[in-house]
Length: 324
Image (tube, rainbow, N blue to C red; front, side, top):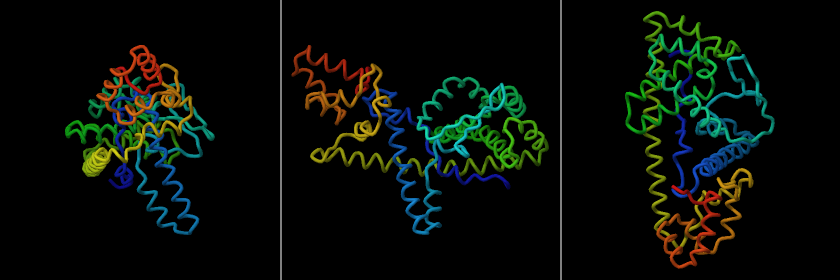
């Protein structure tokens, strides 16, 4: 659809921070570690881009930026380090100067707090969508809602749920196009909800809107195909690494903990997983490097029960092993 740019959605990534866990690490610690790993990739792209710009290779720098994967933290626009949030009490500006925070946690909380409303909007028809956006714009016109429908649509396509993906695309495009309508006007998106629906009252206008939805849907289908290929390649590489035990290194999740502050990596029981890991006997450390449950059982059977219980309680409190 003319006037709307969908090209950036070619690079969206799944919102799967809570689903890509190491099988034994505590869930909350996994989210933080996955976030650190993602940030490392971002830093690598930034560093390489700076080198290209310094060398005057602007076209190469632009191509590199265009390949940057999009996820929940960079899929939305932030200008001058200021995030503009719409709430029922009006407009609120939140400044973040030099702050490093885990926005994926905020996104997870947003979904948790508003899942019922998000589901209602997903199932709404055209008129119901208008009503929900007018009455609940403080939630549905947040950046996180915009990201939610796009990322969830990709997830559903990856799972083979085509009909649900198509509905999510349509509802997501209503929100996305309102955002794009508001941008050149420098207006809060929520203010443009009535104008958007007036603009698409006629059959011809609705057909143009649907053309934009179909365009995005086709791009998302192609992205899902590429994403599956990427995952298959990663699984093959992981399987190959597992076949080389003599070259085995601590899993990246354990390594990533060393790049986090003690507060960031603190386990559910308040203990530092790095301190606990380094205090363990070598036999127990190997269990966590390999994630081998059978090895853990063997170590438990060969160790004094009281000593093992003491170690294992600290292991759980540090998030190195999940009770589940």
